[in-house]
Length: 345
Image (cartoon, rainbow, N blue to C red):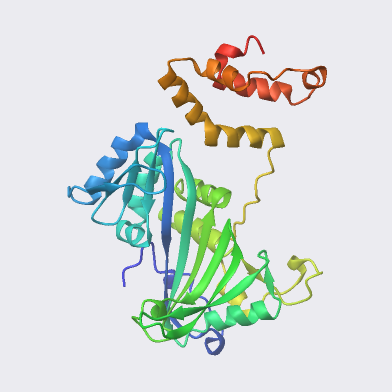
């Protein structure tokens, strides 16, 4: 099986007790989902790369997804969606597309879409191949013993065949923006017996996804790309043996987890600080209604500032409002959005 990135087993293979971890022969690391929105001015450059990667075969045109009016579906899996009022496009690469493109071509696309781009979702996977692999029951047992750290909850779920037969069990850890799945991929795909292909997968969203995107796709080498990928994947969850009221760093890890983390440089970026309430309110207002107000003003043949004035007709500024410390922040927002009414404000 050709890896997306590299065979971790060649230089970072866990050296744990084979009776507890299983007979591990090989591992495979890769990006399993990539979603990027970016300015429309970069679309033609992205199209050139996608056509090159599909050997010149034109995409199938169709309806877009999730608010985009048009979609382009390329033979090797990538999707490009356009046609939204905010002048942004959406590049979507599912697991099959990421695998067929490989990390070099992913970096090639990301270097274009990443200019002014935002990554709302990025998935990372680590696949284990061997026999009698017990990673799923080990994770479940550790969670049931209260050893899970970083993430607050876990939930087992059944793996069901196409004939609706329960084949096995997986474990979900945490919730968005960081969520981990540990399951038997061989059973899920109905291609291999139990314990021969197990997947450890992290689904990152929002700030966690964008931070990983920016870091991964600026990696200067294949080795650094792999190191950053693995460090973010295995840092999402942690397992420690001992009471929860003791600082995690003072507690030992279970042996199987310690073996798995051997020589891995873990990276767990902190969540960004909360923006002020008014700033978050203005951002939401711009995202939800800004384009609608501008488009309505354009069709009506009036300036956006006049539209704003009409919408706020009848509201008066009192002394308390003038003394509000948030007033300069709001004026700055209006200056960039509706400059023709700011002199009066």
